Length: 223
Image 1 (cartoon, rainbow, N blue to C red):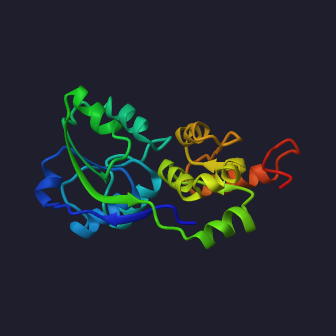
Image 2: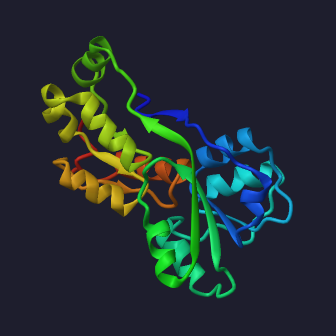
Image 3: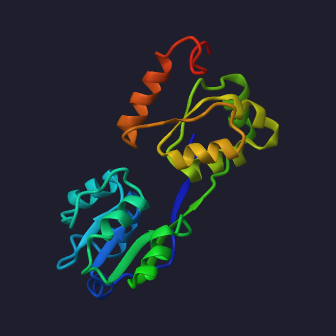
């Protein structure tokens, strides 16, 4: 069930934007794809950092070299820890989607770094019809829900609505970060979410198989 639509937003991106900063940060694969549509890569004479591994892979596929391989656990905190060792980086361009956590853009100025943000896409909740909601939450509810981001989780809760909240909250989750697991707990899910390691498809599949093959006391079994 797609729980996010990714749409472009009006944005101008020029060679000057990419070269006037010491470092360009891409926060997601979507950021790379929409930026590439605005200004085809590779960008020359630009130092680039990717937050996640999938983001790094698509940059490399487009011919864009990275200043540093993505750092575990592939989140904003990992970048900020790495940045503490990079005293020469005094200006940063962040290419991202509208909203988001904002941790990097709020922390770097406290370290004396000039930050420019380019929002190249936005996330919206797709419209899911009543028949599809009935099928998913009543006729054939899943044994496990795989969640790829906090936004996906929040949107799924909104799609389910109050009429299907009890069913949704009873289904175990596999998520990509402890932050998302904490969000699930705040949203009222009955079981502690399983955090995939590493984040992404490979870790998600391993976590799902681990839960399906777990003991009889595991909420993932017996459904």
